[in-house]
View 1 (spheres, rainbow over the protein chains, first blue to last red):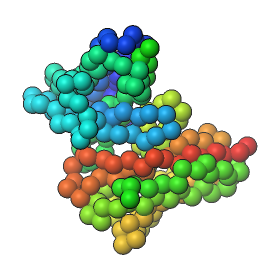
View 2 (view 1 turned 120 degrees about the vertical axis):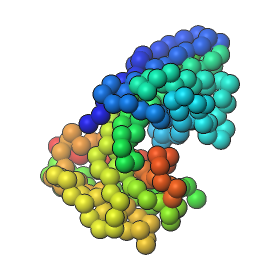
View 3 (view 1 turned 60 degrees about the vertical axis):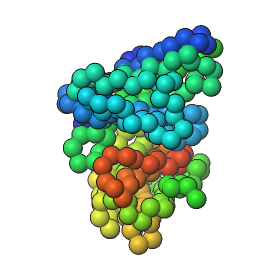
Length: 114
Length: 112
């Protein structure tokens, strides 16, 4: 199957700092990528759709100024959590669709904000 | 009503048995249905997708879809301890495309 990578796999930061998470499609081009957040024992919640060459589309309730998304190329999307706070601690997962309507997930980034 | 509902479990089955996982969805116009497996601390991995009513088999896995009942299930035959994970049901909406709604998942334990 298609390969999607994320970096870093985990990060610990102090409250108030910003954290950037990268999502790359390694063997295919992705004009669209998705960013999800998953809290413990809960399901994946779609945060935003990242579009190459245009602005991201955010889901209701997700602050676009706090979660900055940049789709820099056909293989890279970044999510920056600005001024992170402990309640932003979560598992962040990106995905990219490959044809049809299936999508492949990156390995996830576990963010802990102290 | 949640858009995609699953029994949270845990569902416990003995090794070698059939595990049956169920999911219902609210959007009658949904087009595509997926089962993902998620191990603790890992991201989901796609097991199967199904688009048409009926059964779809892939190895030990069988997905079943009944659009009239808005119901999709996953059967795992000859369950193995390595199958122990959370299984996420996911549905793409009536508009097609890639916006996927996930259920909360069912935790499966396969006892050796």
